[in-house]
Image 1 (cartoon, rainbow, N blue to C red):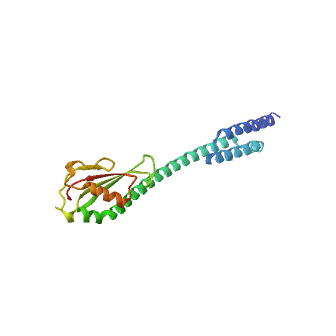
Image 2: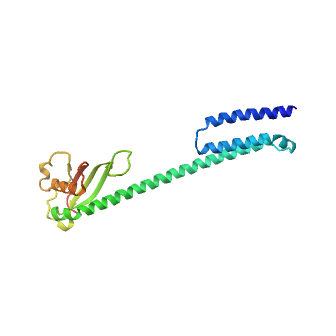
Length: 208
């Protein structure tokens, strides 16, 4: 009789604990595993009299089940961390590819006009986007262009080193008068249609 009373008490207590656990565990993929384990343990408790007759250690079985669930949860977190790391690597590679292709396309658009009108060529293009945003035209804040004298037109431009022109400021100072940086800036802005973006032109001098 005492065995039956203990058995019924275990069932009632476990159902109460299972209800509390179900309320505490947040919704998600983990909750279905918790429900599965709770259901399995409840079945084992219901079968306890049979296990008792067969000398089956139910406590050891429950402990083993919990250990397996905890170990599986740890492995799941490791897999999730690995996926997040790989996702970050893929996004970084994709962003670098996007910037490279964008720079190549923009350079191709202005290569001939720069050479024909100013005997100049693009050395490098840097892009600045709003912090924490995706790499897109809408989030683009500034395009910084580094120009130099073209090898094909070497000697046609009197180079002035390190002249920086911010397109939202006034006309360049007199020390840049030998190089029409403002004209090149206007050409780039028109071709690239950067009417609402900041464009900074930096003259690097003669080609190496």
